[in-house]
Length: 343
Length: 75
Image 1: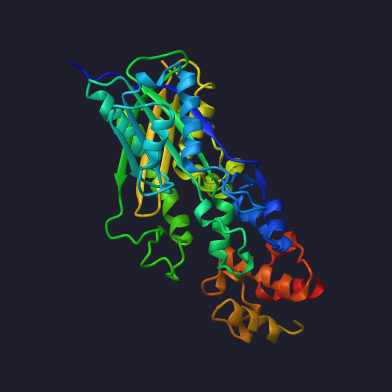
Image 2: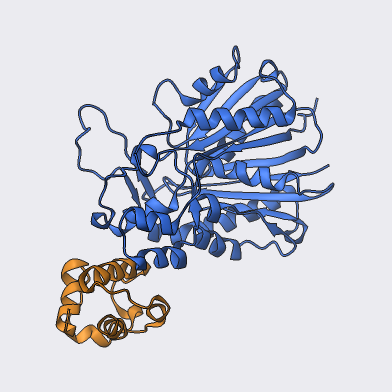
């Protein structure tokens, strides 16, 4: 028996709080006006949402809150109840706790139980990793429906009392690059109204011998006062390597599917920042494609972003339309891609 | 900040760039390690020290360190 087609039945997303623009961040942290202008010119991300309230520092939303909302929206959009979910997979780089895994808290709140659940410790390719795991589980033939989630919260890193001007510039930039949010899709072995076929997913680690491009620490009792910075990015390595790896992943995806570059109607490129995504997209040959990018308006929400892109693309795709999505994780370097096609 | 010496000292001491006074005429591409993040640091420092905002569009067109200095003292 051939493995069944896997259908993306629906998508759902969640963003916390109001959109925070660059002017608001500049004013809130007492930064000079040149800072805002530099962010506009070199980062190109206009808005993002935070789980933490910028005025009080109160954490208003956990990752479980965001994932629950996104998951519920995806299930409702697919018309699928919790009892019909056969497997749950989630990717995140920023779980609420190391244990219990956030995926299981979300499953509990959605009334999903008695099924396998997996949480992947993942970065910007986490959506592809989660889709891949879910897809393999469904293709094995005994399960029909998967809820796949991805999300981030940077509340742990966002100290509203900090003197931003005292931070290294690279750390200042982290504060405007990233945003919080969660997304979800329902995968099924059965098609539904408006669903698209997940034609191919691949994830490829390319980190052998490479220094990490991003490091996120976690601390416990013994090292909780460590003076290591919690988040470090090698933005020069990211600027150099991500466009190249994205182009490789894109061409590999098309080659596997035997799709030509001008047969892609929707391009879902890596979502680093407004400017970086524009640069990366220039290197992806898709002459007929409409680009589906949201990073400039929601910030880099890591594991969540491909779900936002799917949510935006799915209703726009007409019968026969093809979409190609690419992501690159710069921590230990992973390239990944997936393709959708409307039957 | 009133002189090119002050400006070079800012680049060297506050930003850690390996520059000396004779480098003031160098284009930004020629400044070892220069990138857009240094521009962010420099603009922030200049605005903090002078209390004035540099004209950003003109800063983006600055070719040399001297061009940025000229904008900083004229602002």
